[in-house]
Image 1: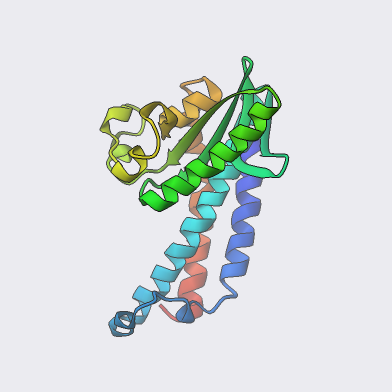
Image 2: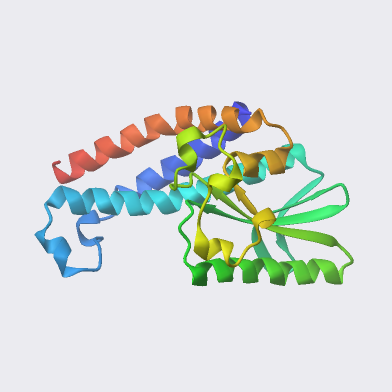
Length: 215
């Protein structure tokens, strides 16, 4: 698995670091006059975090697609004119997923993700496909990461999302990886591999930010 994931992570984060160290993060702060009262390093690190969250979310989508290619019959991210984060076929069923980093979607964003899935599902069903839809979450902040390999879905609470998606449509952390791969060993291995590879990139990024802004 490491041989497959490492080139993707290295390429993605090398590009991210190169691009973001060229940006002026001092002008990329929160949209509030209260930020003027904060020390410089607060605004710089805040901008770094916002940029990194978005980039890491995209990275995990790429990695999960690669995992699906290993374990499933057919993997795709686009069907006709509709795009989803992940689609794959297994045992005569086409599964389509939207995947988010974190678990704090508001009701409006949850409904948008549901709409994307339903529109894609309709297209697939027009071609006589049997379809199931899901929303998956990685690195949820609401307690789930405290016991990455043992917690059950019943511990996960996000009312805005649960109003839009049924319980059996929500896949969190290890449940998401198990659903895609059908192998309980994959998530612990994935966690260790990605952490190992990402860490030195983040050290380089932090060092570059500190040097550029005199922190």
